[in-house]
Amino acid sequence: MLQQLSDLDLRLIRVFLSVLDAGGISAAQTALNVSQSTISTQLATLETRLGFRLCERGRAGFRLTPHGAQFAQASRQLLENIALFCLDARQIGRKLVGQLHLGLIGHAAMSANARLSQAIARFRARDEAVTLSLAVLAPGQLEEEVINGRLDLGIGYFWHRLPNLEYLPLYTEHQVAYCAAAHPLFNQAGKLTAAALAQHDWVWRSYPLPEAAGAGGVFAPARVTALADNMEAVAVLILSGQHLGFLPQHFAAPLVQQGLLAALNPTLLSYEVALHMVIRRQSSRGEVLQAFLDDLTAVHRDDA
Image (cartoon, rainbow, N blue to C red):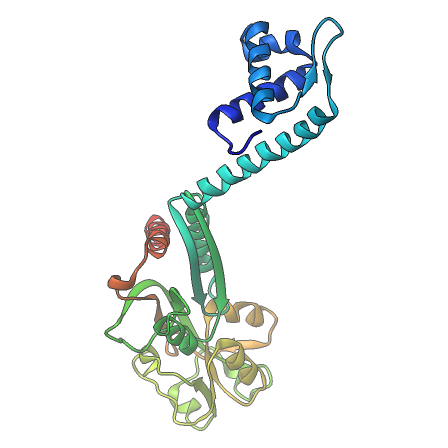
């Protein structure tokens, strides 16, 4: 009676199933590339190991016994489970295994998101079994989540330069000041001077943005009466007709085309803001994150 399963038993089981699939010992010779006598000996050895007869074979032809039919079903299930086990083992042994948590600001330029998508595609082409998560957060939240370890990498505006984080520049975003169609300055938009804007209310970012201080080098709003932490909120306040404010040019473009917004003075009232990716210092960087950083850097280098 079979107590333990050996490599020999697995070979004999495969021979038995090959004979069964072929419909007999004679027909299985080609598939197994051995003689009938060898196959008969192997079947007899397996039956001895099991303690019961698997099939009737002889001049009357090949026929499974009731025990043989049950054993055939169990054998097929065994081999299927072995194949699944081998697949799982290969998955475990893949080069990159784990999780990767990414965060980015909302409504980034399409070109920037396209590069991120390309980096993800490059990463997925690697030998990996990584669960990927992507969150869209306000700039302040991105940095906080990276600091706390809930994000591996964030892409956005970062005004801090904390010693335990690395800030790597990715691309720049062009910010322009706008007013809405309902604002009294709308019909004069295009070449408005700083003096003409002095008595009007502005919406400003609730977080520091050093690049915006003195946009164009000559302007800082005197009347900031609203704060917002993301561009969607800034746009809502501008579209109310009660506030002037800066928006990324790519984000505002569809609203300008619809006649809902107009740039106040693109030459005077605009600035470039750098977007960075932020990660924890290299000492805490794992192989999964490093691989993705390599892919993201390569994509941006190729597009440069």
